[in-house]
Amino acid sequence: MSISLSSLILLPIWINMAQIQQGGPDEKEKTTALKDLLSRIDLDELMKKDEPPLDFPDTLEGFEYAFNEKGQLRHIKTGEPFVFNYREDLHRWNQKRYEALGEIITKYVYELLEKDCNLKKISIPVDATESEPKSFIFMSEDALTNPQKLMVLIHGSGVVRAGQWARRLIINEDLDSGTQIPFIKRAVAEGYGVIVLNPNENYIEVEKPKIHVQSSSDSSDEPAEKRERKDKVSKETKKRRDFYEKYRNPQREKEMMQLYIRENGSPEEHAIYVWDHFIAQAAAENVFFVAHSYGGLAFVELMIQREADVKNKVTAVALTDSVHNVWHQEAGKTIREWMRENCCNWVSSSEPLDTSVESMLPDCPRVSAACSL
Image (tube, rainbow, N blue to C red; front, side, top):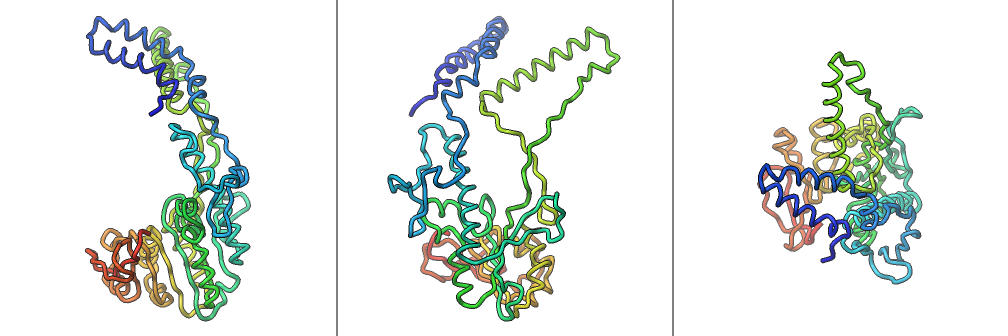
């Protein structure tokens, strides 16, 4: 196991401090001296030697990766699969690199939805102003006009976005395993209209404005000596906090704030919004849902909020490793009965495909997916 440069330099100091602190009050002066020494160490310079800049390419080509004809992510020069531990013993840097690649792949999948699947990107809220935060979904040309059938796809929680089931599978396996594209293409081939939800796109991030706080001593009626003592304590506290932050996160990233998208601030809100403004308006006589993981919970919440409409329009629901819970979500008896008749949850299992899997909850049947989803 390799040890970082800064750890080697600081380790003896930490040990000495721990030993001194155990020595009793007479060692207080030494502790203070060591703390002062630590405060003088330029951790920015030390940590820069440990961790390369968090500056990554913004294209697959920049990462020197591409998807081959089988939809597998491979290194352009070596043909090797993606390597997470690109820099040994730099887990944070490797994780940031992985996240940067993930963002590129998200945009790549969006392009495939439009170019390969012929879906249209639809902005929401539908009445959004130019300046407010917006999200989007994807729909086939005939999603609202197909008189026969409509397929609605909802992914799970986390970093995945519209068109994805699992980022990990896209990167480590292939596009067919990790995206919704095979589902979409087959649905279109069999005459379905298609709507792809985007339930995790709930907000946009903007840089937090810097707030200048006026010192409380400026307008205080306290004696000057007392104000000076308070200011000194405040400065020492800030110094210790900054010291810790420098060591923990030397490449300090911008402080961001989240601006939530109106009526789409959560996966549950998003599902209800898309239902009200699109699915409920669709001409299709039969609507089918495919919902993975948290997407199943979002569907159950949709049922709770729009029970009569959902029962009237939805024919069947295919759940995959759904995390819904009819008790915690307080789904009524009529909803549970409907789910038993119209839903099925395929769950991770080594049993043969469609083998019944016991459930503790009185909702829909659970059967084996014959794999780990």
